[in-house]
Length: 377
Image (cartoon, rainbow, N blue to C red; front, side):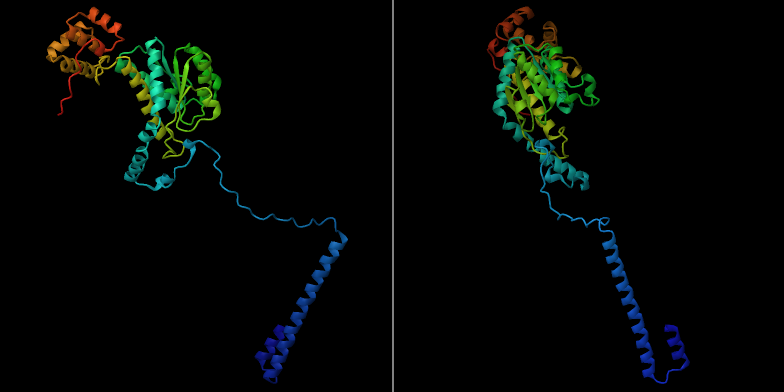
């Protein structure tokens, strides 16, 4: 019909414009009637289908309303939380990264200072162990274990101690110092076995290092050490759970807050741990006479740098020339402490050794003179 109307219009077959309008209106009416009829037919078909098979059409499922779940901190350990001050560090240039990390590190020493009392008590416990011929043992996993091994390894050259006096133990053994050992830190029995292997006894001090405060390997070791009568301590940078607290006689908890990179405890937690270890061993060594004033008089001169330092200490304390200092050290077997006593009291090495032994190795109890004053440059 639409084509017929177009032909009539183009051919001028309509008598008037009114006739053309009537034809168009009729065409539209027919189209509308057809659409309505088709719609009514579809509705009747749907109704008939529902009536014929009511059980085959499943009712429309009800969609529950969308609810927002509040954010929950799944891990209570501070060391595992995100640091709000470094969330955009991946966009930072090198100088900004330096500034961010430096700003975070400024709070580490303050966190350690809050633990001054338990650290002092630990120093006293380690001093007593040393005086009675017992040992200090550090134990940890990963970074924490490496820091303990590092501090223990520094004692012989710095203080002239027997390597068995301060021992560092890491989960997975020495291979783990350079290579990660999967699962080693999660094995509490491994910690127990390490106490057996190192023959921990009453009188020893065992210090567990666990940045998170939860390491099972450390918990197992401390529990076994305590059952053997050893004094136990824990260094952690997050509040430890009750089962860890139960196996530690002393708690040192420098809480440094979330790391620059979430969970990377080799950063602030590692720095805090190293500071605490420094205090414990240095403090205990000073207490048993390993220094004269602030001079390391029990150092082991194993290289040219340390030999030079030993000679300079003898030069400053005894007020003699370098040649005389070198000769004096040779007679003292390279022992700075012996050389100082020998020169001050005019005795030989054997006599100086006996005098020091009688006074617990403390020079100030043998030599009446104080160390020379510091001369400002």
